[in-house]
Image (cartoon, rainbow over all chains, first blue to last red; front, side, top):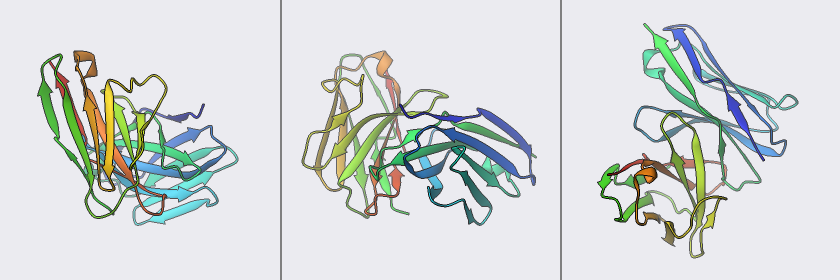
Amino acid sequence: GEDVEQSLFLSVREGDSSVINCTYTDSSSTYLYWYKQEPGAGLQLLTYIFSNMDMKQDQRLTVLLNKKDKHLSLRIADTQTGDSAIYFCAESSSNTGKLIFGQGTTLQVKP
Amino acid sequence: GAVVSQHPSRVICKSGTSVKIECRSLDFQATTMFWYRQFPKQSLMLMATSNEGSKATYEQGVEKDKFLINHASLTLSTLTVTSAHPEDSSFYICSALGHLNTEAFFGQGTRLTVV
């Protein structure tokens, strides 16, 4: 079945860039998403990219998609302490809205 | 983005009782909603897909008689955990599919603790 993998932990210093990586197996993925989850809270959609795109930028966030390698990354520029959270990548196919999530990457931002 | 409201945010119940969790799309109509379960420090696992006016589609391994889903209107889906046991304690999150079918908006989640 479909699988989405992420590294579990990333630690950066405030002001540095953070890069969170994700790999997926479903070659029919239509959309790929990045969600942010703060402790005890639901998921906040950060951004998503359509599978025929290579890159999408939204303020401090840059998403890169390498469809050949099935690799997705999220770059957060000028990382702030408020960015500390768990970041999930997810993929969906066929416009079903059904999402397959990675395990989540805990981002720790040190002052 | 669109708003999905989930209620309650926390609930503690006794073993053997039932608990109902509501998921509402506040500013849009959602024909499809999803229910996920998240164990501590783990990812979200899809439990079922809820379609307005029809029976929910459950993922493999999810007991449909234990996790009752009702999607009676375009803005409300409910998940009822019946005869709850401590192993049902978890974080339950719903999402609603936006009208373009490209974005799924999530509720705040419900922390269920069965004692």
